[in-house]
Each structure stands twice: as structure tokens, then as C-alpha cells.
Amino acid sequence: QSAPVPSLLDGQIKMKGASWSIGHYDPILTLGMLGNCCIAAFYMMRIEELRNAGAEPLVTMLVMASLIEALVFGAYLMSRRMSMKKTKKVIVGNKQQQQPQKQPKRPAQKKKGSKDKDASSPSSSLPATQEYNPQEDPNSIPSRIALRTVLIVSSIISLISVRDLFFPGTIISFIPRDDIYLEWTGAFFHSPPLDTVESDEYGLESPLYAGDKFMGQLLGLYLVLGCVWKFASVCAWSKGNKTMEFKSPENVDRHGVVSSKMIWKAQAFGDMLLLFMLRMFAPAAKSASLDLRWHLMTVAYEMIILGLYGFF
Image (cartoon, rainbow, N blue to C red; front, side):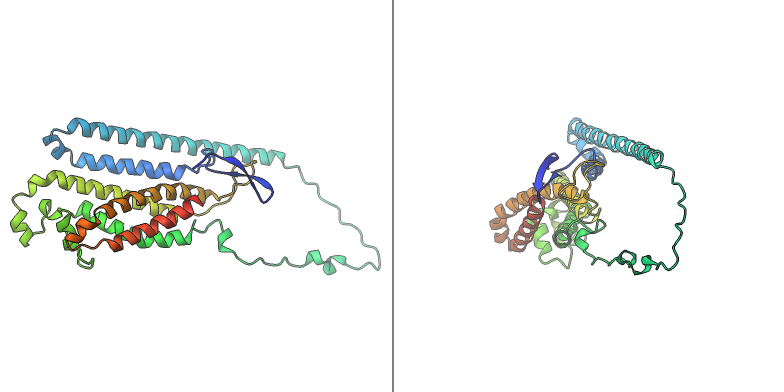
């Protein structure tokens, strides 16, 4: 997202872009802090296996880097929250000091024979109620179309990713050809289900595939974090107002929309990479009786929607 720059819109100069002072980056930094903590926790839970493989120094560096970055994000958010509270107190105090003391007005004496014009004046009538427009409501979600798209596509991705992260090798019965997917990806080698043919065949050799299990769970963690970012961008905050600053020109996009658009742009590129990987392995999956056409169509649909609403 570009920095705030003047934009000529409707004959008026308005600000367009993201601003650090207004807080457009605060939701992104919050999600990044939580993501770094999750990645560090995942590595720390698998530290024994990585120590046996001789990768403890590298894992220590990754955990320290994630925690330091999360600490920096958290410190910035806390300092910003404290500065915002001080600024609001100063502004409220200045407004109270600038308010002039109101003097009571004397009621005007009416002349005899004069009619009460207030009752007949058009200004005394009740103002006409404007029709409610959900697009202008600051409490509405950033985009309903993006919300529906993310709920449809990312819910399925998050379901499979959570299974691969916490329950590798578990077959989900209502997903078509899920057993073929697990067999083709090698999940039965490191996590064969109990009391099955795969358990009798690969049970003794499963500890040898601990590295494959670690990479599969790490990939599932990254996909889950990406889905959390997309869920947050469509339903975690509202549109908000259009005010860029207290005395600056009006922003083209609303406060919440600016933050959501930055996430939609990044996630559109992420969907593009995922689509590229699925398309590259589609012939190999087809040879194993696993059709990836629905996967390709759903990911491509989400990529197009997020790209359209993120860049335009």
C-alpha cells in the first residue's frame, strides 16, 4: 500500500493510501505478532526432534527472530495506544477551554396581534429521514463479496490445513477422495491411522519419516495463518470513517478498507503461488486418480476476487 498522497477526486484534493499515524497498519502488525508467536511455539514444541537431528542452533535462531519481531510489534502497538490516549485527553481539554461561556438570552417581547411564526415556518418541521445505505455505514464490513468468497474457499483450506497440522493422517469422511490425497502426499508414511492396512504396512517405518511430518505440519501452520489473515480482513473490523487525520483532507478509502486492501493484495499473491503449485502437480495427481480441477477453480476464484478488491 502506498503512502498517503494527494489525489484529485470529484474536483477535490483527498488523501489516498495508508498512514502510520492513523493506524492503518495496526491490524496487520497485530496479526503479524500473533503469527510470529504461533511459529515460535510450533518450533519450541518440536525442539526435541530437531535437537536429535542436529538442527537445534538453526531452530534457536528462528525462534529468537520470531519472538524479537513479535516483541517489536507489540512494543510499537503499546506505545501507539498510550500516545493515542494522551492525544485524546489533550484534544478534549482544548475543546473544553475553547468553549465560550453561554449567556442566557432574554425572551423577546411579542407585540400585540403578532402571530407565532415558528409554528408555520418550514424550518420547524421535522427533518426528512434519509434512506439507509449499507455501503455508507461505518459499522458495516469492508466487502460482502470478499466475505462470501473467503468463507467459501478459505474455510475448506483451513479445515484441511488444521487436519494436517494437528491430526496428520486422519481421514475426513465427508471430503471426497481424502484417503487418496493422504496417500499421494505421503501422510500415511509418517502418520498411518490405527487399526488399518496402512498401519500394518508403514507402522514400523513411520519414525523414519519424521522430517516429512514436520514439513507437512509446518506447511499446514502457514496455510492456517494465511486463512486467519483473510478471515480477519473481511470480518474482524468494520469499514470505519473516512477521516485521515483530525485536520487533513478526507481519505478516498475508509479506515478499515485501507487495512483490508493491504491484506487482500498480499493474499492475492499468495493464492497465485498456491495456484501455481497446484497446477504444476496436477498431472502427477491425476495419475494417482486425484483430480485437482476443483482445487484450481476455487483458489483461482478467490485470487481474482481478492485481487480486484485489493488493487481497484
